[in-house]
Length: 441
Image (cartoon, rainbow, N blue to C red; front, top):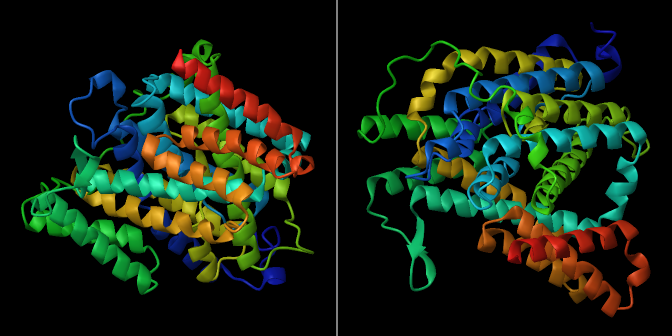
């Protein structure tokens, strides 16, 4: 075991790897409760039952997808990187694909499944490098920041801090509302924990907020802590039910968005965590193909189980900071996700007031990429800004990407920088133009 994971070469031990794996788990354990609440559209009242995914089944799918994905990453790629259904992608799945496009969640799972298969194909054929190089870095940064604003906006809505206003579209909510006050308390507590550098700050913030909610009678006391594992039956295999419905322009854009966000989020996470752990060699990532393959397999498995795109988590950096250097830490994290299956009764205490702070804080973390965009170059600033601002304003990640990718070739051509535009970008330009024509029709 030590030889396979190169313990001596990397100067680590079982103890360091276990602590690192535990730290990573605590840092991302919030997804176990946020993901089921998000995919079931728990914060949206008065929806038809068929539009909602079963929370218990999604909880089980989330834990299993995280466990399987982390295990594959640990054993195959041997990196201390854990996986789970991604924030941002789950919001896109729920609020754009299901709620805005009115696409059945079964069809949305089909889109995730197909995007995972395409990811596997691109990884095995080596095409992934060409695609990564075809998308300008500025737009990658813009997409990440835009998703961060979108997630934060959803968090503010779920908390009741931002509400509908018929006169000006949105406005400040009733800050005297007990549920809103609980969410604000959760934000403050989580911010304090994060500022203090507490590993697992988001998870502990949710825990403290839940306890305070129970004390003040805003959340019902759970009848038990440990219980039976919820059945996967409501979601397992649903990705195969509507595969024949994915051949539309709308679903093509959905699949491209799943693929695009997962593709670059994974690449960025791999490089960032590997660099932090000192695993890069000559600025190259060893076993990069195996790492990307692990991520894409996890997406396919997660879709079959019944959850949105499974991806590499930047929270793995917390585990690396705690000493993790090998894939054994990911194996530890996988085991902890399996163990967490026993704690499904806690889903009952996870309300909008509890999840909203997590969404807001994750959004703050994601907008850090804004500093990487050269705002002094107007031909770059326009598509980047429109990508970022369009996501929360149109309530759609796909629309934000589409608008930015349409404007990029236009502004670059007008600036005389047409030679810098990759042919793939022209192809995406046409696809997104058709996307808007299709929606207008």
